[in-house]
Length: 185
Image (tube, rainbow, N blue to C red; front, side):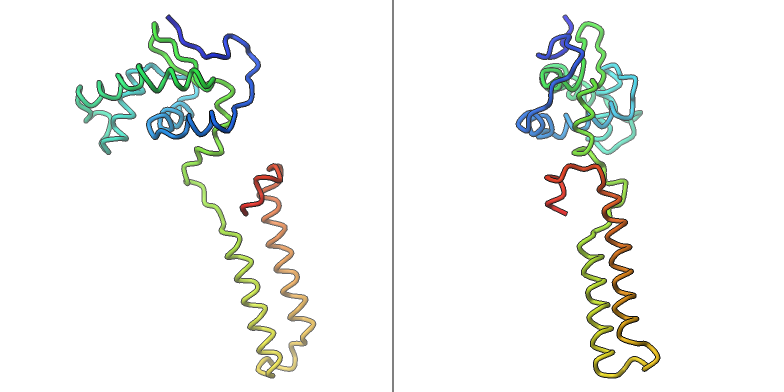
């Protein structure tokens, strides 16, 4: 019997609720399933999936996985995790064929599954650094440490340009994100 999801065969995915997203992502094994399937765009069979997850969980190469390690993961996937992911509408799981693949709806979870491989600039430190440099330059100018050849207006103008460039880069990187998501930045 094939398990697809509660969404039935409706090709138009419905929006995942916040509770569903939290439920799906609350378990590390389900997150690993999604990670693996994101790498294997065509889908996978449950044996290959359980072998790779067992390798990740035991921190060994897939070739070193024992039957017992793989079977433990396989049973858990088959009985619990894949049906839960299918019910959420993020995977198509066919029990009879032993295959699993991502649905279009799974792309909603991509932002939550970022692996950290891409580096994110800690923007609050960038702005704090600009403010610190500006404060130091202003104090040095006020006490006459900077040469008279560097007018106060040049310091202010230079800092304004640096701030504008940083803000421009920052806004370009977050362009297209909903405003609600920007509150934490």
